[in-house]
Length: 136
Image 1 (cartoon, rainbow, N blue to C red):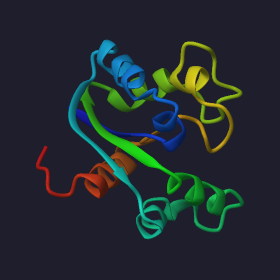
Image 2 (image 1 turned 90 degrees about the horizontal axis):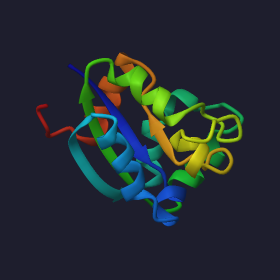
Image 3 (image 1 turned 120 degrees about the horizontal axis):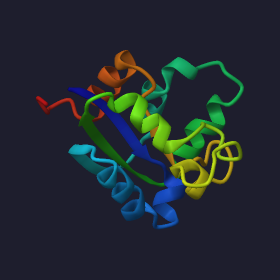
Image 4 (image 1 turned 180 degrees about the vertical axis):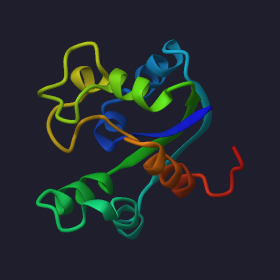
């Protein structure tokens, strides 16, 4: 069984879309095996998004992600990474079709409602980053 990390970002938390977003994952037959709400520190955010360090959008992403609470979830299922990425839509919400999470709840970068792991390797790092004490 594959696992992936989802982060419901500060924009979606602030706009009260947590329940609707979680519901879409449940209706998609994903198993939620970890869930928590937290406020990221700058250091945590920088450590999590280290792969983007030096990129033009890095500072804006960090500042956005520490601007409010987030909800982190671990989803499990067959082919979960690809299936989740199909459900959430393209990274840029302006390119995401209606019916996808980013198309329905995102507004502009980096306020695109959710983060999702993009590979097995990043999922392993990301799940462990937010749920280090869990043995899924």
